[in-house]
Image: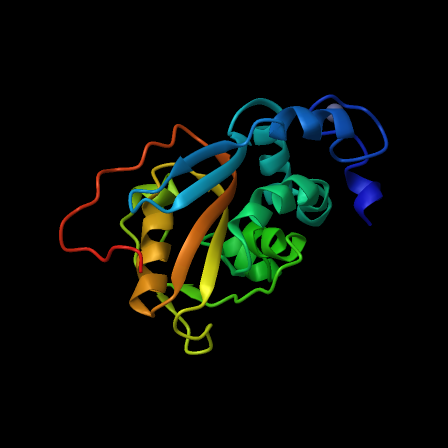
Length: 205
Ligand SMILES: [Zn+2]
């Protein structure tokens, strides 16, 4: 199926694959290492621009499986240094993804080859209609009852980090349940600069 609709590189147009080796290498050659507001290591495969941005948009709207598969190797390289951990995908906020039954972050989690716990749940913040950018909303999340045991090392994966609000909420939800968040891995960062830690919120355990 992958070859039928998206048989050209989304960036350079080369036939034969949704993302050619040369482009994938170019997008991911210099992963961005930073940290969240809580000081949790955050790795982005690249910046949210150019070909990587095109690939992520194509993944969202067209062939998610094929594109994420092409990014699987750099994803695994980014996540491996974080050590043994259970991968927790960021919940998808887009109704289209929910309707199709998957989100990019779930596919990313699978691509890592590590154990997965798809247990993050976004609290209902009312209708999403009319919202322009997901991360402008203040979101809270919680963990489903079926989740890793207290003390488990976990890595959170998401497609794009912008303000970091979602990442912060996910880390807080994990910490509330006693999980040890050892890292966050995203495909791309878009002008990410973590907000200062606000008083009264949970630090990472
Ligand atoms: Zn290409």
